[in-house]
Image 1: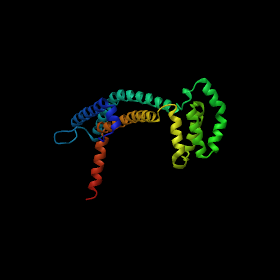
Image 2: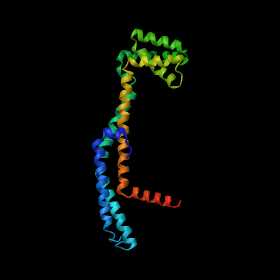
Image 3: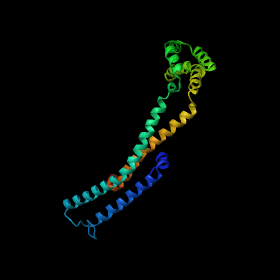
Image 4: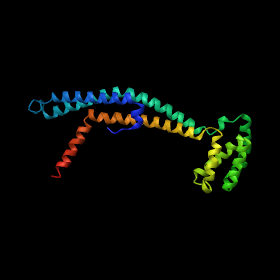
Length: 228
């Protein structure tokens, strides 16, 4: 199977267990299907009964596999839920929670004026205003300025030579290390992707149990034979 770093690194035991479950289930299916034919390959039962028995074998094997695999998926889904909640909290933490009550009051009072300055100002003016707030340790102004500078940057206006984007990084740094936040975001995204990949791995392994891989291969052989 294709190597998926997130799932193989985060859930090595689960991946190995799922592969073992699928292998044992496929072997059991093969043994039970073998009992449906004689030594010369002819079916023991009439065609309809043969097909019904074969379908029952595949269905029972798939159900048993699903029940075993579900335990690992439940655990992975719970981890994914925690990671998604943590990511939402991280993305929502824009600095407001770090302000004191007095700073929040100041930010609320000055918000309309600073918003107007950022939305209507030239990049160089905004950068000077940001630098002044940073130099003065004015966290209320830094919070409001960052909020509206981010809108301009995300809208594609990074300023001449990226000066607005640089100012935004400096403003964000007042409320935490941007690089650290980015690293946390990447790790949480990796955990979420790992959980999704585990579910995909379970389905890929099940294809060996329920006969989907076998049917696909048979179909490809028929298509290939038609070329000759």
